[in-house]
Length: 129
Image (cartoon, rainbow, N blue to C red):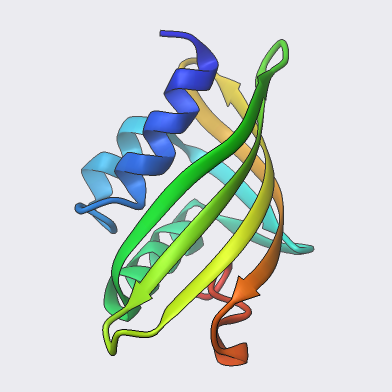
């Protein structure tokens, strides 16, 4: 499987119907994983907590890949994340991300997010722990 397909599958699996499932997360992400979102750095356990927060707050999250490119050990994406909250409101974000891979897992992600629509309260949804 090429890296672009792997990253796209990771996004859709980890944020999909089984959001917050540790086994799914570990299938794609290294235990040494680090994520930097809009300057905020979180480690693997904080990333897992972030997934739990999303699971509690959302009914569903869908990912639409707008563009994707592969480097030697990285994949860059521009994607739209659409979160339908439990109370029925919708928040959408444009995400620019660089996923670094090693030994068949994502080890690091650097991303910038921009809210396209939704409540200002959800502006930190991409990194909330």
